[in-house]
Image (cartoon, rainbow, N blue to C red; front, side, top):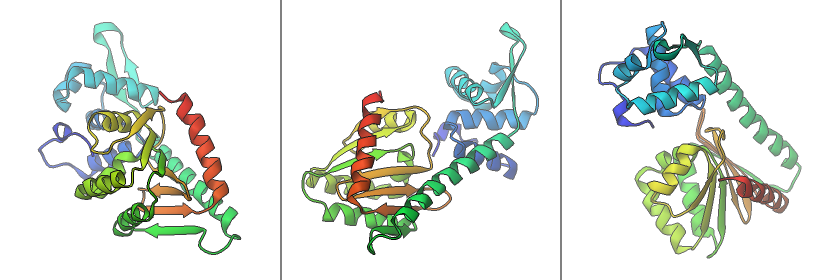
Length: 258
């Protein structure tokens, strides 16, 4: 969900909504997505002052957004100095990136399921739908032993918070009762939220570039892949070897994260 001050009050055209969803799905931050939509609508190069007026964002936010778009090659720079203007490139690149990220995530889990489908029944669990996934999260906490751990490689952490809604406080209270430690590796916005705003007590570290489609949650008895696009699905592998290998990978990432 992006900041309310980004949302324009006039009725949106379907094309703009389409591009905004595509921008967010491809991994652009909320502010960069808002700037990108404005530039697409204009269809011509715009100087920063005009972009600030049209988005109603702070000047620094606009420059940060333009820098992010330049890194993703989604904007072309025209002119120099005070005459510099910015022109949005085709949104087709966003759609291609979003689809590739989605397919890579799904392929990864599909490969894991093939590895384990010859194992004893019950090792692989698939939980589909928002209500079922929420109920499953509480079931895991209720069954957990006191003092267990929960390590998450994320990027989609904000999706989990939005999914839980008002029940996030109940989830956190139960986690504290069980004294379950939580470590999180994620993207810039997720980590900032965890450090400054989150109701969940946690230790978070940053690794730039982590996608926002799936979280990997590592517990003592299982590894869960939590999807939020194109539907809410959890795929869980209950296997000691999977837990050991995924937690070893987590420790490597944790040591290099900021």
